[in-house]
Amino acid sequence: MRAFKALMLVTLLPFLSLQFGCASTPDLPPAAREGLSDISGSLDDAGASVRAVVDTLRRMENASGDASALLKEYSDRVVAMDRTLDATRSRLSNIRGPESFFESWKADIAAISNTQLRREGEDRYDAVRTELDRVNAKIDDLRDSFAPMHRNITELAKYLKDDPTLSGLERSATTIRRTLGQHREVKAKFDDVQRTIARLM
Image 1 (cartoon, helix red, strand yellow):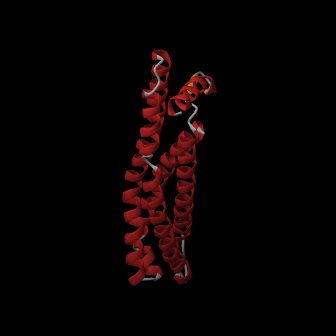
Image 2 (cartoon, helix red, strand yellow):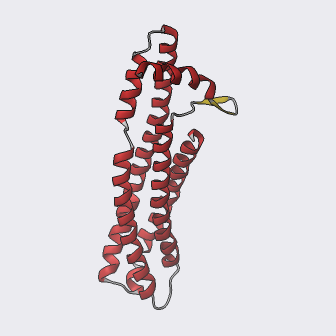
Image 3 (cartoon, one colour):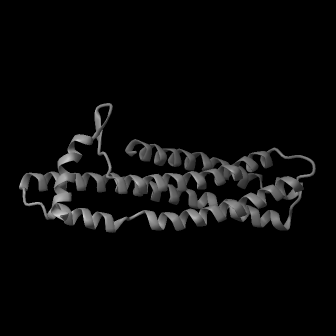
């Protein structure tokens, strides 16, 4: 039964590739596609929480008068962001690396006696793994780029917790500008990850 399922899979998949301009992108098996959809949704949630913090930071950069409400908003949004990031990390740890799926797929391919079909299946397997590995590498790069920005966000929150005044805010202007600058790079990499996933979906 496993060999029959594998035979049908490898026979049909070569005819299902999607064309994007001059390049061909492998049509992913349902299990891999579902995993990517979950990754994209998790990253969207994380991205929204970061954008909320950045929106407050932009207003903090030009604040005047009583800034207490704005600083409380910043503190609350940082807490909400970290809660969302923790949930995202937990979800990604379960999504990324669906080794059981790949192990099963590889075993099914190995059970095919037809040499040509088995070779086609191995090529398909390698192509899908390459695409998913590319997504994972981009996510790792995004995470590494976000780390210094996140550090500035949380340390700024600690600093302003003890000095929630306009004077304290003014003295943190350099860190705010640096963090906003870091966000531009992080956002570009975030958008690249999501475009890569969308291309595979």
